[in-house]
Image (tube, rainbow, N blue to C red; front, side):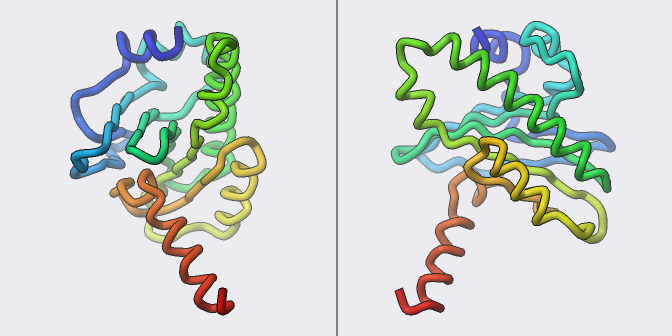
Length: 176
């Protein structure tokens, strides 16, 4: 049910998630082996109530797949309140994960292989202190990756190029 509700009420033909004050996180180009579905304005769509997201939820969801991974990325945009953004992402994750777990009881191995991501777009001039704590809290809550960034292009994060680049840099530094 969650995916059908999202498809019927929230899917967008555009490749962006819109936040307050017309902030946007987008994926300007999609490669030939990729699929990216954007569910924009989740916090304003009928999907919110149908999915039982009674508390404040995230701004949007991106379902991303390529030959190597399937990911669900929850996106929230905030100017300053990282604590509220974190709570919105966690509440949305808890509800979606619970619904999918019930719905996918016969295919739980597929659900376990989903790469859950959280992306907080910070549109302010600089990132406030403590953003690493927010990322770590989200990772501890079930997200495999979490970022607080002022980069409106989410492409590399969805593709995990950032994580791969950082891992490669660390390996070279430590001689691995």
